[in-house]
Every structure is written in structure tokens, then in C-alpha cells.
Image 1 (tube, rainbow, N blue to C red):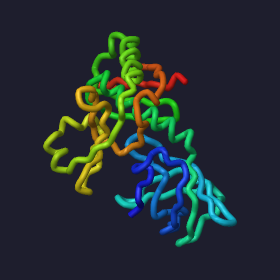
Image 2 (image 1 turned 60 degrees about the vertical axis):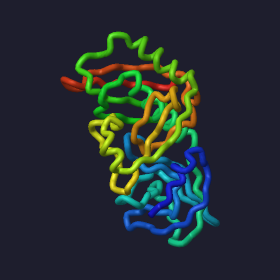
Image 3 (image 1 turned 120 degrees about the vertical axis):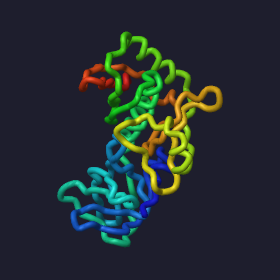
Image 4 (image 1 turned 30 degrees about the horizontal axis):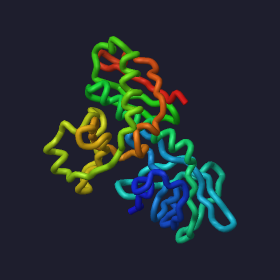
Amino acid sequence: MTATLFRSDPYLREAPGRVTAVLPEGGVVLSASLFYPRGGGQPGDTGRLDWPGGGMRVSDTVKEGDESIVLLPAEGDPRPEVGMPVTQVLEWERRHLHMRIHTALHLLSVVIPLPVTGGAIGAGKGRLDFDMPDAPENKTELERALNDLVMRDLPVTEDWITDEELQANPGLVKTMSVAPPMGAGRVRLIRIGEGETQIDLQPCGGTHVRRTGEIGQIRLGKIEKKGRQNRRVTLELAG
């Protein structure tokens, strides 16, 4: 099982690791991963592994089964040997953009309180698909509401509940297309705000900023029709 350093500290940019497996197709598995694996609409992290006398560019990060995280090497790069200690170096600027966008999309699900049918996170841009037959009447008001939540600088924290508690509270799940990961006995929740200022609480395995103010100003992009019942809403960072 790969320990998840990206979850215990999403701001960690460099960390040691030890190679536990090198897969026949080329992927490298470490004892603990600084790199977030592709999933939940968030891309896999990139960066590099360094070791004495060598190094490997990490072109993507994916999951292998339920427990292993696999680092995919750039084409032609060498791979470390099993048992070798390495230094993981994250491509931080790209990850931080993902964190800002991911948290912004949670805010989008607050100002548009409708079921989410899909989503995607990019480096500075993202989108959510909503079960929304008609387009919003005033995009300017939505954008203002989003930026108001950013400017409130609300704390973004995590909590954990059991599988049984989530099953007893199905309203926590906003996504219709992707079920939260269950089966390990507990589910991670992301909370925005606290106490009377709490505005959102939902299952999520991704990486997020510490406070909404860190997102920065948001611009709403296109609102497109995607099927009879669906509207795709895009947003991007203004700076």
C-alpha cells in the first residue's frame, strides 16, 4: 500500500521515498507518494525522481488497484531499481493551479445548488456539468457570488466519516456520475467554512487550498448545453 503524502500535506513539494516495485510496463511504485494519482476529475501530478547518478521525469501518476500509486516515466527515461531511495520533486506550480481550481469548483457547486453530472480540473481552468435543464438567467450574478465566497477567505478543512455514516447521509454526495470511494471503512470529506460560516461539506479525495482567499479572482466562462437536462459551466482563474 502506498502512503499518501499528498493527502497528509498537499503543500509538500519535495519528499524522500523508496522504490517498492518497478512494473513491467514501466511504472514505478514508491513506499509513499508525493504525487496525486489521476482521479475524481483531477489530473495526475507530474515532476521528477532523483537518485545518486540518475533521475526520471514523472509524466503522469495513476492508481493501480485500490492500494498502489504508480508513477509513469517520460519516454526514454531510466527507472530506479527496487529498494533504491529516491527524492520526489513535484511540479508545484501545476499542482497548485489544480488545488485552486478544485476548491473553486466546490464553490461553484454552492452557488449552483444542483446535482453534478460530471467535471474536470485543469491548470487554471475547470468545469462542472449540472443536471440543469435551463441556463442560469444571470451569469454576472453567479460570478459575483463566487468571488464573494473567495473574498470571505473561508477555511478549507478535511474530516472523515465511516462508510455507514455516508450511507445514512446520502445528501452529502453532490455528484451523480462518480460515487465517492468506499470500502476502506471511512470516507474523506472536504469542509468549506466552519460552524455558522460553513457553506459546503462533501466527499472528495482531491487536493485543495487551505483557504478560499488563496483561489484568487474567478471568471465564469461558457455555459453550454450538453444534452436535454445538462448544462456545462466553465470557470478560470483571472490571475
